[in-house]
Length: 500
Image 1 (cartoon, helix red, strand yellow):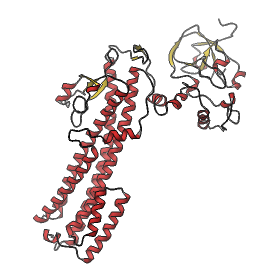
Image 2 (image 1 turned 120 degrees about the horizontal axis):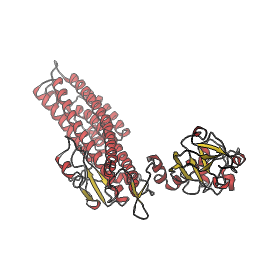
Image 3 (image 1 turned 30 degrees about the vertical axis):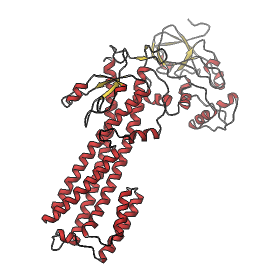
Image 4 (image 1 turned 120 degrees about the vertical axis):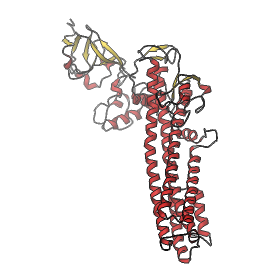
């Protein structure tokens, strides 16, 4: 697999995962539409049965003014709707409509039905908008961080400023289509369209006297049409904000060029085929025009284009050194969770978890809580690293600084078990002093066992030891792939004064 194929695969997976998230939201929205249709049909049937004469209801009968008793009953219903509208945070326009209806001197039967249907559609639109907004916010945030993670494996790792809720909110509320409408406006436009279509279907059903079966069937079709529109909106908006997030991240990481990558199969559109592999300057990137999404249900995505890195041949992965700007070979086994903890949320606090900066008293206190040990703040000196009961507060990241390097221990090297126990997997080179190992004071009494490597040991994790327990640290620790005693074919115990 070439570099380009590797990065294509990573970004295609990112796009695919975000669109799968959209599918889950579509299922939830479909449930909302089904429930609204069910309640609407129930209201229509109850209304029809109340006013029909001999199982028939004409338009003039439907337009007949409510009598005093009917108006009193409906007034009570209106008050209930107003209370629900306030609790469910429905639109001010809908609440105003309810207030106007309650003040009318005259109100006919059809208007009483429409007001009930309006409530169901209003509630549907409100919940639909909340679901979509939550999806888009999560899509933008998740795509941004994962784009940064993948891209920094190429460019080199550095701190990433955490996204603020205000930045996400402003991005979501900014219109991006040519008509200047953002997703919220489209949802409420679909709501108005659905309400009008229901009014038309009910009126036509009464005029032709086709009965409730005909009316409810026609209304079900209108709901299905409205859901199809909602489904397309979810897909399109998710695709856009996933790409918008990537572009914003590329800009923050100072990526200058992008490459367009289409999913090539029998379903690929002509425009996506034409744009596939095209390289675009970031300053020229316009979603929907020069970069994806190019159409509804668009599966095309983009990757950062870094000449000499992402387009290099071969299977060995490289990264661009953030200081020198040169391409260097790297071991990219840093997991996303490790990257996020180190470079995002709270960079300084996260760096302490990787021992990249000295621990504060607050951080040591937090570690004590995590390790279930009693701890009183205000300790000084090496006592900072011990709990109230004298037990050591162990350092994070297994005591190493940063991400360990994978090496092979060569035959002939001399090591000793770091804690003096053959059941452990942590060792150090034989010349590493106690202070350099930064061990708790109780470990100083342990007998050390020395070993000579008689057969190469692969997949050993090498780290520089962090200063801890009042010791200077900076020695070397080696994490073996398994315990010392289980590597009897690779290690032979020796006396320090007789290393051979």
